[in-house]
Length: 316
Image (tube, rainbow, N blue to C red; front, side):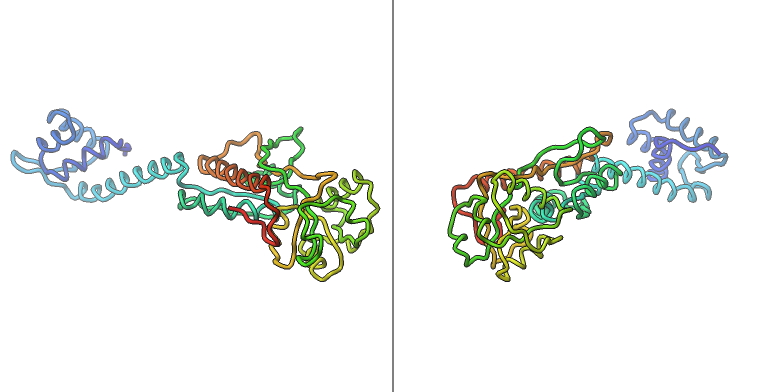
């Protein structure tokens, strides 16, 4: 049995609906002889008569009655498939898989997702949080469509688009006299206990760079693997620490204050990591634009002359 085309199925259904060659031909925009030939071709292809017709009536045969619901289903499936494809092309449907650093994900992704899904509610967003190298690997291995992280090795198969600079800030208790200042030099750590991150963390490498550039003798304590542990030790009165601004947005403790560190200013680049050999879906492209908008909001808040808010970093 030969397969029927969509136009043939449409002609079959229109004739079954109108029970008139004249009316069906008029609605299809073809001549009555052309419709008669089409129906004959259909019956030849399927190998059985589909309509009983005489000079006054056209009715479905048992084979035509069996084909009728199948033809309806085929056309509905066809419309559904291309409607879904259209939704995907328009960016209104699909799945976006994002890997990101926890501190960055907590600051950038919630407001971006809230704004994005108000416009694209049918798009599903999946998030994995991990350290920088694992974020890069997730994109490299195509387990994630994009990563939000520091720059990868650009000599490889990844590309990078910077969104913002995430600078190191001094972290102290909210009742510490240092909380009254606008910003502080690294020299404040010379006379205070300093709670540091462990050697394998990216934050530790940033901190060591600042200490080396400032030439400040610092007593390093605890070597925490998690920024939340370092923050909890500060709250417990065990000393000061240096974390990034986005990390402080993740911690968001009212018991803490943060102030920018200067002389030197130390910051890491945070941006979108993508695979060079893979195009983003239309939905993912739209989400990149929303991430860019949220990054602009954070950069504008960085440039504000007002002193930082205690505890939670305010992100519009």
